[in-house]
Length: 429
Image (tube, rainbow, N blue to C red; front, side, top):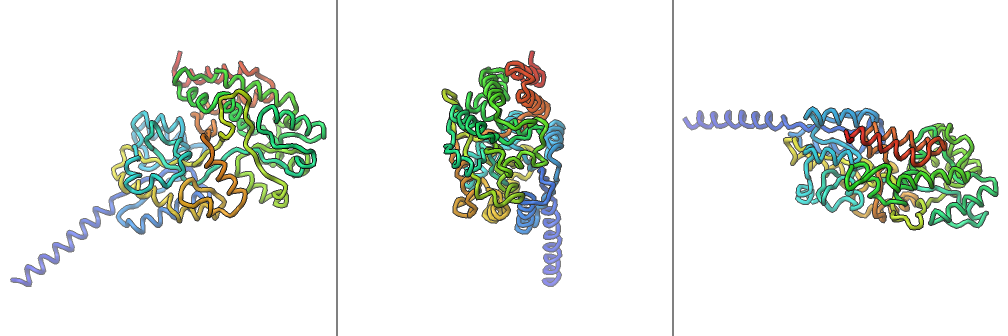
């Protein structure tokens, strides 16, 4: 009798264990992101998935890669259909806040504190995914900023100092033009390249609030406000003062037509995302010895802090959907995306993680170290307009900005065109 009872207990235990195992295996988390190409971001994400699933074998993460141009639309459709993924990537800012206001995104603040993750992230990088002090996304993959790279040898030969104000920049441009050197290498057929100048000018005139209020339609914000009109005026002043090469509107950034001016001593400055350092290293490594960077100058009387940057302090922000049924596992996975192993992988591949301890000490490349210090020391980092705005408005921004460069629109016309597009998009009268 005892043997039979023992046998029954053994069978029950086996069956119970099997049923629990089967039940545990049913935990699945879907993850959406844009990293379809092999590289630092994709490798780090997939390594985090492998390590997480090894530690939590009862949880499987379904990784869905969507190409960049389609991602925003697919995510918007999924949100509208109440079919959003458990974990999803965004660029933070206005679009993410729209989903937050719609109740689609989980407030992970307390969970981050509980998991010991909250203080792991760079404070300036958290702003783009925070609302009213609550965190709805964490920054992953890279810190990027638009910087003015410049030829140190040209500046030294002409006794030029780094300009810290717009007036000083005009003086530097004057000396460069007098010596038959193009001040800025710019290829603007791509449109986003010129957008960087406009974004900085808006920030320097009106501060980060000008764009935020216009984008979010709050506190009387408008794309036709003084900050945008004045930015257009400053931009066209640069054009009229020969800041850019002849034919720059038809030159292609993807064909290196801007950088070639730097390489051949025909241009002195180059406003570009910090990824340009790696691009130049691959194309013309000896030039790095003659290259450094400074932050876009401030404007006298402007509201924007001259240390403010355009770019992204976190590049990608990973959020958890409010409807996710396994938020506890989802937030644990975010810990794997932002742990020391992930940081080391990103640094080894030329990325600067917006998280982790002693990142400054881990970075050995002098330029990467300088960039980290610039971004971490900034009070505000303005996310690229074409990533902040919905695709429809992003295109209007790019088109009107290119028209400003071509002197085809007045600053007032460009500002009104953008504002009217925003009103139509938001259904305003």
